[in-house]
Image (cartoon, rainbow over the protein chains, first blue to last red):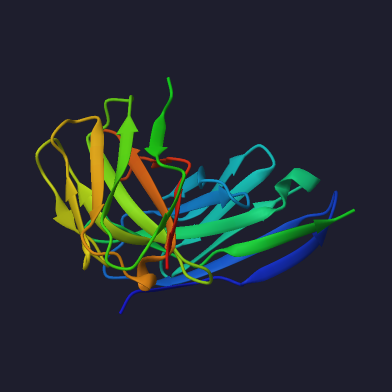
Length: 109
Length: 113
């Protein structure tokens, strides 16, 4: 079967760095996405990785290792507005997204 | 550009009633999707469309029907609502390639009593 695993909840301090991990087992791989979802709102796109390595975009970076079925999202200089759920999703061989349940990130002052 | 819009935002149904959720996008996107989101679970694909006049089943299609008569609109119908269909429904769309980022509508919160 297809499976995406990520921690249910994480807590971090304003100004710090946090790493959210995602492991996956899917039938085929056409890329991995990270989305941010604030409570009561729609998901919004953060990053897309299809090759191994690190992609940096401002305070956010995303890493992929296809051989290990592993990705992480790194958030630096945390701000209160970063409190949200972070969704990991893998595009399978049918070009359909398989979604993890999301990691709720709580930022404390 | 409004992006992706959904109507209604909220709805309460009684078991056995039917309804249609409307999704509209003004980005000329080929691909459109209907997902449901339940607590503790990832988004699950109900149906999707790869272009005007086409539809296909996703992971959880039972109890739902869809139509894409116009490129900009994707309708989701519940034939006979059940309490198990209480959920938040999101519509999404993306452009020329399926691996492009998906743009989501604001969601419809549906409660079936």
